[in-house]
Length: 122
Image (cartoon, rainbow, N blue to C red; front, side):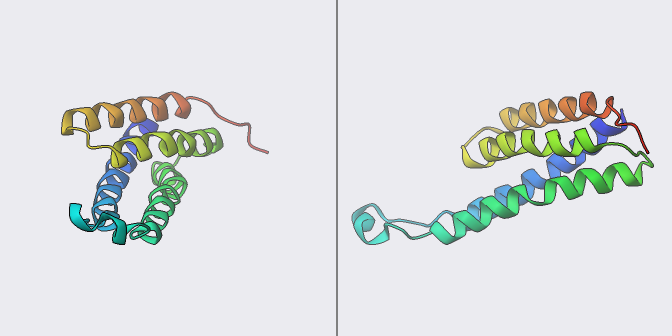
């Protein structure tokens, strides 16, 4: 249950950050000057992609530490991989709010299931 709450919160934080970054990275290209705009926004897109994926392991780890849970290596590792797919899909496509929320609920459920796994502590 704690992992699902952490996944939901982290997913929403990253969703809003990715959406804002995606809006920043998308260049406004007038249709009559498309040839001059090729390559514009590439740097912003790369920065957005890296910034949208890199904080997720840290958010999952910090959230689980605040919940006083340990041994969540699988949640952090696989949750980050799942977010790599979901985050890119939700922010990159023009989805409705309901569709985006459905993907974020899926992420929270996946985190909840991954939170049930524990690695033995040494």
